[in-house]
Image (cartoon, rainbow, N blue to C red; front, side, top):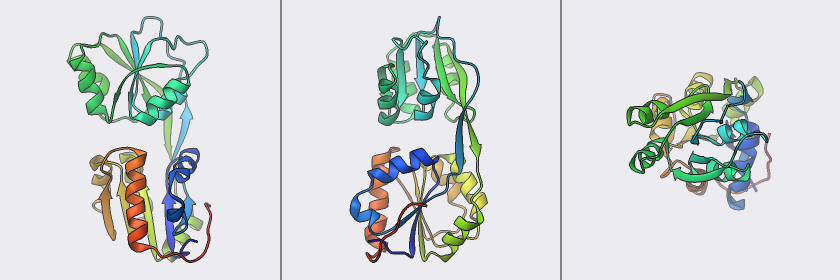
Length: 246
């Protein structure tokens, strides 16, 4: 059962946070009390993308695949995805996944090296990193960016802040640079933090805040984040009494 003094803070949108918690081993969940406090809210926006003259689409996140899905679209065209999870969701929604990169850099390099023909359409959120469309265009593959969802910032409420202050230890996995910046703004006084960043880009804004430790996942995927949390839980948490997600 979980140590009531150890909080596992999940800052992803609620549905994604709950999916991630289900991936954690039972012995980890016995050692922590999960608390869900999303720092981002995903909202579909904009007009449905016109795929009539598009040779392929790019999804750099699972939210892009979910937000772009429409039954009247021609999903027989290839989809190029960042991350296996994004690829799985795109395939489940009917897209034909042709290439996968572990991150945006790897996917761009793969598309350039394979002389992928455009025009391509990057279906993404309002806030993106990596300049995927720009780099592909520069390499000669005409690519347009089309926003299909918004990532709205959310605050951490007073009840959650009180839990964090009262916890002896807080493990906080952070999955995006924008979430990291919001976390720094919302929790400047919480010092007993063990932060787990999904990538070096995510770790950068976190490095300036007070913390007990800051680690970076070996790979930018859920499995590596789970492994990093498991190591922290085994190292710092004892087993005492049960808890549940809030």
